Length: 382
Ligand code: SF4
Image 1 (cartoon, rainbow, N blue to C red):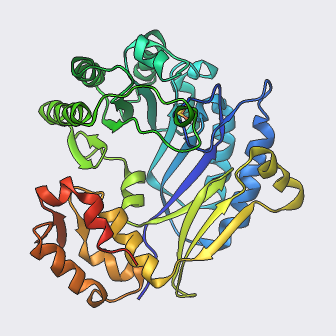
Image 2: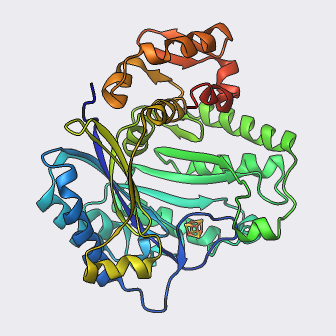
């Protein structure tokens, strides 16, 4: 029987100062004058149209992602949050995250964003090395990182994440270790540590720089995981590490196959509708210009579809197997509408192959399963 899982709200802010050569997100170079006011009004109208999907459901987290949300002023963020609060029931302890890039937070201080209601920041640091930041086309250097960290400290925002990449062009193992040490020294609650990969349709896919070989990238990953563990950052997802109790609630809801209301250009949502017996996925128009036209036409939706029964099984395992604590067996039926019997045979096969183990009410990847998590996920392909 389908039941509604926890609900989050994702808000996409699609502009950046410059497009990074490795980036395949829905981000666009910001025009000289950002249509911030029009965009916020479009977000509110878009939200309004989605409300019937989630009437009466409390919201546990809100995430402003991008793009570079910190290109928007604190007052624009406040306007959207007030509109959200007026229309949906935000839990008293709601987590509200704003992604920010060093070098773009001069628009407003973090204290101003905190006053607007933001209580968590995700900072796109990527590396502390000026040389490596230049290699990957970032607009900021270590001086801007220091300023952003200082601004966070003045604002009293201790719940912040640092995004850090490894296997950057020309990066040595010692440099990757130093980056992790610098990140830890900044005292974030959370660190996302992930490998630079070359994605299709990016500038790096056309002109690919020389990257560290696989063995070196593996060593960087392992050294990072070890250093983070020593510093008290527990790995709870493939690329996510946090101090005790400070995991990203928003991302955990995503990985546990929770629901997402999505507003903004190119935003993707997932909503469970027990009355229709359906799990719905939908996406908003991707191009900011097309999205903004929604304010006249009332049309923000680019696609909407029901997730098939087989896809629900795969999506559920694909997401929950990203979590180190493994699959919550009790989530399966309410979130897919299916009986556990449907997957029993495949689960047993994974257990027999030494990839998963049953621990209380969870199915945990073994160390072998964790190493080959993609293969484990594929067992649940339709
Ligand atoms: S700042 Fe982030 S979202 Fe913007 S282009 Fe660079 S990687 Fe993409």
